[in-house]
Image: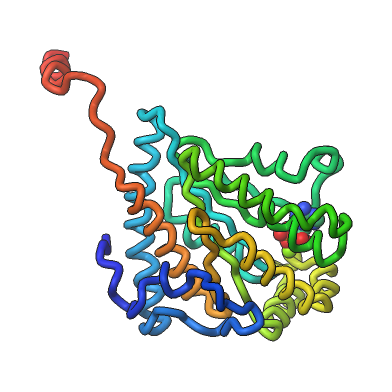
Length: 287
Ligand code: AMP
Ligand code: MG
């Protein structure tokens, strides 16, 4: 279990990928490995070691959720264009922890029922329970991304959503949820290669959606929408992180570190026994 996070990093991941007022989506080096000075081999080794440590922290969160009334949970929000690697993030990062402790939700085109409700309705229903790590594969941010790019609702309707989302997230944080927001970026070229692979491999056809190619034509508009999202919804209580994703080993390691940081900041102890240990030992011995 590698508790020491400094190996391989010259700047801690949380600092290296945290959004600043100067962050420009168009300037993200998607092949970059911010803060990490090791190579792929070290990155992959660390992912396993740090994944094991993440798992031990998660178990503590889960244990507290079982015995504490005060709500504490962590919510990982993954936003990124198709092929950015959201599914792989779930498999290779969240895959390290006990599935019992994970509340996973993915958000696609709203269903007929979802369309009849406020856009946050389906989000609220999927929030993590006490002691859980929640994972959103896409999220409420689609309602200021794809919706904005395609004007699925008029600007007068999506424009107020930035403030509304900030308010919503403030409520979540106040109620004991730590948000870890990750914007995942691949280059247009890398996306092309990943889509080509989906077309070439029968085991990947299920991931291919002809609409993904259409969306490539809207890249500049998506960049603009992602920029507005980062500018307007990165707050001190729920900051965005910009993670380059052309190198999957890096993005997975970086997100592992973000989750470890969030869990460590909760500063959890193992919950105390709610029974008399000596009495129970004596009872067990006699049984
Ligand atoms: P995937 O993640 O590949 O299964 O694709 C899900 C699709 O649902 C993506 O094209 C998203 O842009 C789309 N989507 C998610 N949320 C919304 C929303 N609120 N309005 C419209 N489309 C959405
Ligand atoms: Mg897709």
